Length: 78
Image 1 (cartoon, one colour):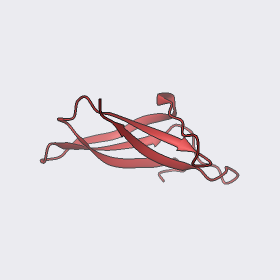
Image 2 (spheres, rainbow, N blue to C red; image 1 turned 120 degrees about the vertical axis):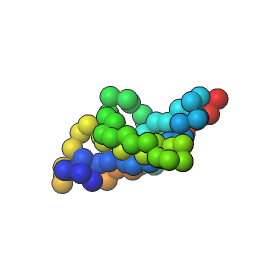
Image 3 (tube, rainbow, N blue to C red; image 1 turned 45 degrees about the vertical axis):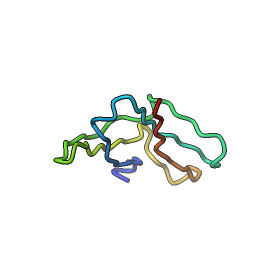
Image 4 (spheres, helix red, strand yellow; image 1 turned 120 degrees about the horizontal axis):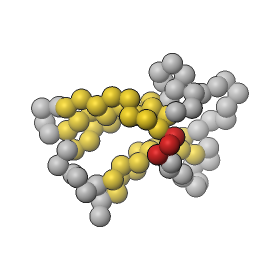
């Protein structure tokens, strides 16, 4: 967590251009949702092995009164 914002850092293969990655969030682990407006790419840096290290941050901050939430990174390849 960075300044009360949930962040997720992952490596992305630059050669996998047809693959789609999306961040999904849910409170109950049953019906996952993904909305590109909910996240912003915070940083991206190239690695020597053909991948990028990507950090994504959710646009809404976490408050102490918020319910527990689960986050996952979903990859889909055509």
